[in-house]
Image (cartoon, rainbow, N blue to C red; front, side, top):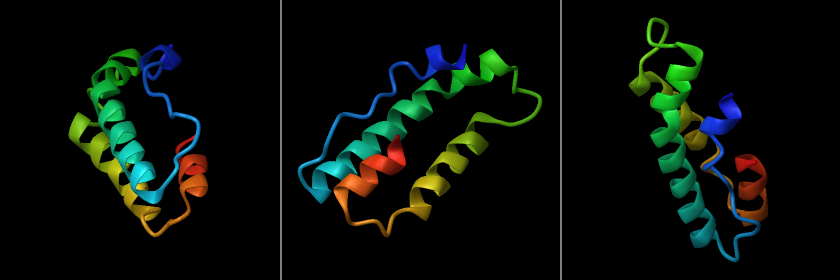
Length: 79
């Protein structure tokens, strides 16, 4: 069921540069945040956590890897 919520959250094959990789990370974050209401509905998480807490958790995981400068490693972290 969750796979249907994240079906639209796909990571393209390879980034040519660090700039392109950063752009793809932002796109991934945006799509993941847009699918959070569906994930909340599927798993009935409204009593447990809020959408803003989930969004904050996703962003903290992305920030944790902000030191990565290799586009291929960046792609690996998104998959």
